[in-house]
Length: 423
Ligand code: HEM
Image (tube, rainbow, N blue to C red; front, side, top):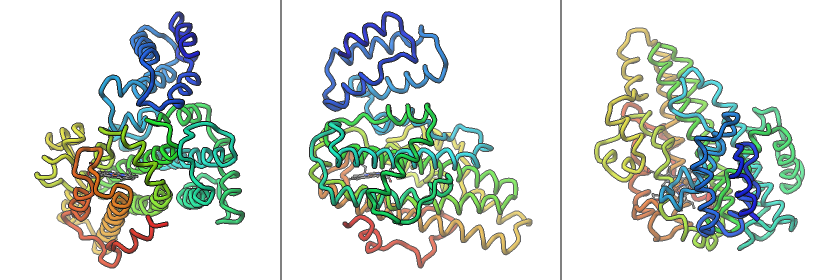
């Protein structure tokens, strides 16, 4: 069916008539790793036709982003950002004017709510026997209940800010998830729905890969927001707006903490399922997350050994900026603010506390991530070509700031992290 539809489209290419539904269906029925060559060739022709196609710019941009994601494996460009279809999610970037920082929050809130409810809707459809999508290794109903519970908990603060509040656990988690999924879907614009529907191209047909992809996308959205807010904090400090800087840092800390239940949600992934689809994800690893490294390098200048290690060699754009010395860090801005005579003692204390608290939250995030990786991977190596969990064990305690230590009473311990990822 896709051959006829794509040939017909190629005879009069119009970006808003592209047969997305048929193409996505063909990808979903085998997984991105196994897409037949004739389909890849037709999509390659569609991409070649792109520069000659006229039509509304947003439609063209969406089509280009979709093809970028769909053709990454045959192009041998497959990596974390294309696996996650990040261009389709249109997240804030570090090139956005810093004045937009206050608006990034609502944009990211909407995306996180959409991503999490989309995976819950998939879980519910599979539970009800209403979908044949990714049919391998379906989870047991009890696991679906847990996913709903953790997913709802992770987006509760987000929903509240969107004015879509829910009473905590008023009904059963399943019923509540049904309501929230319908509410969030109804609140989405056509463009938002379109990008959500196109941004899920699993490599195989195992049910749990949907969860894995959506949780990674939600965290990636969170890091994009953190990077934007930390840039906002650096800029605010540079002009002496301490309260504004503190507010950006505090909201970043809250975001990091509030999204922790996403780790619990991901911990419900069946280990066998993960090990099955992971055979086809080699080359895509979150070590390639640009936003995570932007966050890290906005806090302080990373040590030379780290800049020259896989951590930064995997994110060349971020590394290039660092090497060019373009980035002012929170450490730099804090030191300058202290040296200037106009930082009063109470402001100094508030700023230091906000940074120490952020530091503790990020260290906790790393510990929880490490625990989850141990649980899922065992001794296997990472898809980002590190030795796997030993790499994570070594990097998880790297100080977040050079100037301010984490608040000691909230320094993460293994017990807390274990609680989050253990079922
Ligand atoms: C099944 C769950 C997960 C496993 C087994 C896992 C495993 C790993 C491993 C082994 C690495 C080291 C690099 C490599 O060789 O690939 C890594 C790095 C990383 N992972 Fe995960 N991960 C998981 C989930 C997540 C999630 C949900 C996120 C959220 C975005 C995430 C973010 C990161 C980041 C940012 C790094 C880079 C850390 C650094 O370079 O310091 N991971 N992960």
